[in-house]
View (cartoon, rainbow, N blue to C red):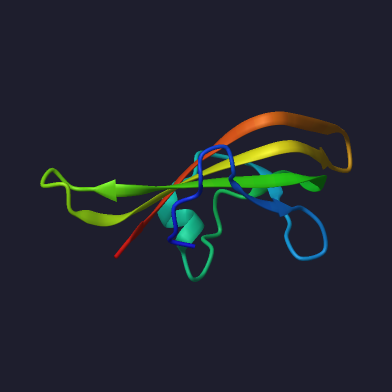
Length: 106
């Protein structure tokens, strides 16, 4: 949603039946072109994969303005909270992990 979240009140999405997170380890470095490709390139390949077993995704939305203070879009800061990942060989958890910022434009 392109709507500012109130302070200390992020949007919260529970990981479960309607949303999921897959954590992947690739054989080489990937970039946005790889991730956003309509047809995934043959290389690099996924070497290991873990599925989130629980936790939440929190999103904090703020305005993005240009140098003239005109609203041009929004920043969506994404956090994983208490997310547990499980794979065929091992598992790991993130208590509080900053995933990144997704920007939208008007």
